[in-house]
Image (cartoon, rainbow, N blue to C red; front, side, top):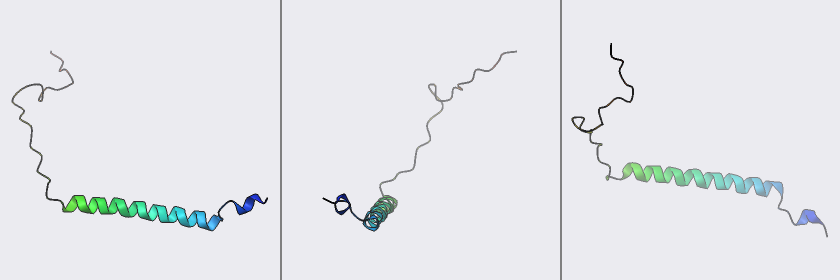
Length: 64
């Protein structure tokens, strides 16, 4: 038996890889377009810094 007949030709493999990349890029683009068009986004609220550890600095100040 000839083993070369069992493997697909190189141009078929390259064509399938290119087709897969085009489909993947198209699906990502479609998802981004859909996310942009959706009206469910709300502005991010600014957190209230008057309570808790939200306003605390992680770096301790040196006292003189």
